[in-house]
Image (cartoon, rainbow, N blue to C red; front, top):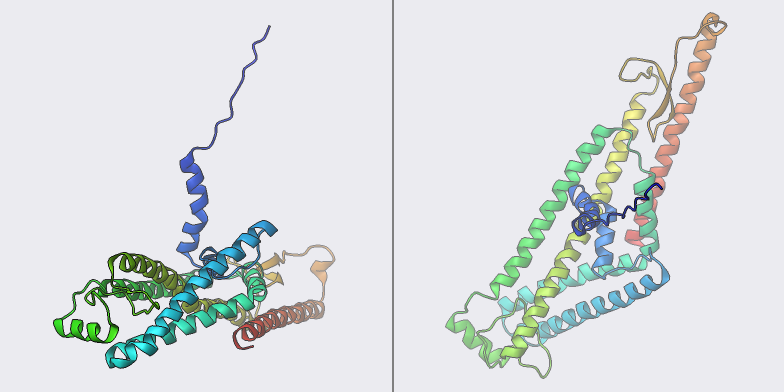
Length: 331
């Protein structure tokens, strides 16, 4: 009797699973996109775009409420410190007032994203599926610009965040310590936090409170770093993507009235300029080879009329996209 061979299926190694999970993130970091920014918003609990099943959407809602509660609590105690403590000391008041304005602007932007989450999801899908990639040279050039802009902003915001945390470790002069002791009524005024806060009925300088508040501040700084990086990069990303589309549109407009050829010099007819789809016009034989010059000119005019229609459709699609972006930003 023939022996049966039993083969066991090999389970994927844990390393392979990790690589499979982080591969999309590495790809997104290579060339960040609007999808990458919106995914960050969801993972940080700032916006729920409702892209998952009902159960996960409910969990995401709870996560978002928790994150927004922490952010609002931080903004409240920071503003309370500004109007009750920092107002008595001008240098600290200017710093705290500037921080309040920046935090309010960033949080207001997030509130706009939460309110317009369906439109943002629709625009993200349009940019991924409908935006033209006909000219790979323009696509690669804009990808380099997007990558440079993203990392420059992240480095700038990250530098500010690290500096904010390090400032709390710099010892105060005796004069500044005396001022803080007099104005803030703290037991240990030499213990600094990354930013000024006032929690009612709590001495922020006492050791258990100080450690807890410092860790909470570090977490808020991390979330604020991501929030700032997203809100700062969102408009430049959309602008660069639109510029790419208009650059391609201009290239097609420049070809109006001129013979269209491929890289090998063959005459072509574009069937869809947005996807760079075309057909090659081969040499005709038989009846078509004896076609009159007037008929060939008529066919060329008919093709160019269709080519102009494709350009107009492309332009109208870009105008509709711009109107949607304008509605999200200003309405």
